[in-house]
Length: 426
Ligand code: SF4
Ligand code: SF4
Picture 1 (cartoon, helix red, strand yellow):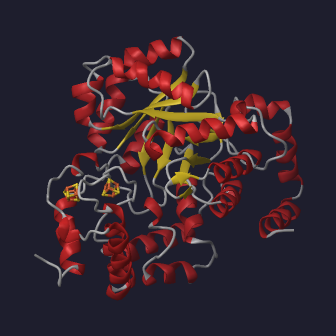
Picture 2 (tube, protein in one colour; picture 1 turned 60 degrees about the vertical axis):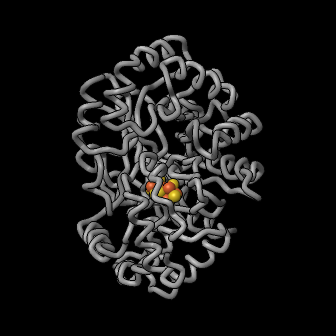
């Protein structure tokens, strides 16, 4: 019996009939009717409402933007293994996008679902990118390409990707994109309409109210970013409107998972309940009734196994006052430690001179979290691999428009150079 099975068996024994009845329900047809997707075998995954859609979803969604790679290519076999495990343990929401892994994420997702035969067991979410689009006909071309890549005749949850006030006003509205989405829904190519956003609460509210018929939205939230972008206010506003709420960056690109500042690790190790930092971060979200799904970009099997286990234990209102105080203490301990709010999403790449922007920012954050020596070592390794240093930045700012965190990358790169390139500085 492995660690996971052991923990599960113990939980089952303790919970007795309550959990067993949930197991039985998940295996029968009643559960299939609840999810809108048939369950695969036996699962103890609790389900949540997806707004007013009538669909029930697993609290954990599989983010397909940080898949395992070998020599720069997606490791398809490993992706298939991880997805199969997740679906067989009750996960029913997979989130990809036209641009993830330069288009290969959708292809890998489609292939994995085809091979496993599990397409109809899950909800596929993917996204339409406005960047690179010159006119509205781009939308039809992209949607048809996505259906082919995903090897399916319909997409369950379709999002306009990374909206902000400018894209909404200058492209989405004048191009009548919502009419196109509704026509695609009528044609059976899309089931539910949503959008993801990296902009302020005011921009979020404007987009929600302007259209007024959104089924769901995707917002960045974690215990450090309650007031960042649409944030917690956005989550509550969307829920009031009956929208399903999908959370991205629950671990802030991994910053809340590993290499934690010593002060933050101390908060968790001294907490009355022992949980991993990842479980604390996810529980913070799952505690809220407004949240339907937390997406996790799982890059290895261990992440899948751990996160599934955490999701199985989750429920609305699961955190006590003491638990919430632990999370708040961790938040306070984090403040001021990170020099750059980079989530390592990689949207800013490629840089014309080859600067590995997210890796250099990670090294800069390591200085605050783990000390100068570690940060320098990390930076030197990344700079050697890439064959460039931060001081090679030509301040072209081509990367900045693409950054959903609105980081002034060229200016921050000067800080990276000042911290690590003193000798090489021009
Ligand atoms: S501003 Fe610097 S980091 Fe950004 S793309 Fe240009 S050279 Fe690369
Ligand atoms: S700098 Fe911005 S776009 Fe680039 S990896 Fe970081 S958060 Fe993503």
